[in-house]
Length: 206
Image 1 (cartoon, rainbow, N blue to C red):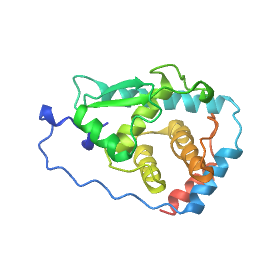
Image 2 (cartoon, one colour):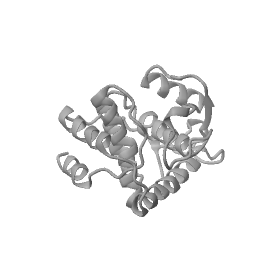
Image 3 (cartoon, rainbow, N blue to C red):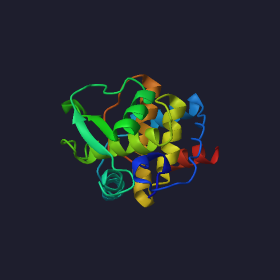
């Protein structure tokens, strides 16, 4: 993987002129609601397909996380846990802090929001997924935490996943956030695969 917006400028890895960050893509509220309601109505049923998709999601996320945090790699970012509920008040604060310090703070997963398949222990699979999302989806792109920013972050991140992992990532990075925008509340974590036709229709509409 190569994420130009995250390269550590102190190591002289790339001398190419910096590209301007891409403008966020607009998503219709009705599209967000459709995906959010699909997530909310789904129920965790860990069948072999779902289990395989989440294993692939975890494996591919771990490879991305390892590349981003490799002390000898081009990014050299450190991820640390914090007890702060909101370590960054805005996306701008998150982006500025990470680029200046090369450190990302991740809030530990609350005990009442344990994921059915992704380990929620400190530094576990769920923390690694959230870290990669913050770094690739927001810090590298400059996208905000608003509806369009989160949708645009998902469009960027989906290209870093393949196979069943991309389907599971849609649940975690698009479905769950769409549910938040639909209801204004964090939904129960789930291990599900969202309606593929719904996801495909939304992408074709781009």
